[in-house]
Length: 170
Ligand SMILES: [Zn+2]
Ligand SMILES: [Zn+2]
Image (cartoon, rainbow, N blue to C red; front, side, top):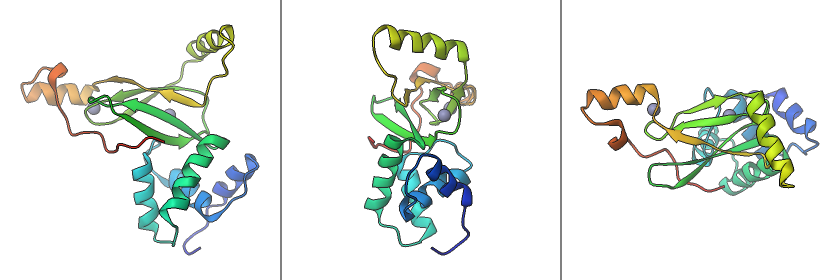
């Protein structure tokens, strides 16, 4: 593969006892190098095509779904203003956390709250459920978007922003 190697992407895969094929390594490298933590499959595929290292979209998409099922990636599912589900992927290298989602600019904020996680876990246990490694983000309007809408003279509740970057269920 041309370009620089990212040893930590291979290490991360080996930590999860996964064979580091080219598509998986490319995916981990893209996530490690991305300034954004949470990326949709479309954003991931766009980054992959930009690398131009000969991956096929289908094997790359398979790597996304496989790594989300097998451990290295976590899913964040959000519902946009039109109630469409969008899935973001992030490296599962942080403690379990929740997400707040701005439906206008598609920004995701992370919430780390050990007490909350403990409570949620207890509810899962009480019902005999194993929690999945996915979070359903809570939708809202971020501070910047509230200001932007106010400047446009529109009440926040009616603000219609650009639709979120992707529609893709994964
Ligand atoms: Zn926003
Ligand atoms: Zn996150």
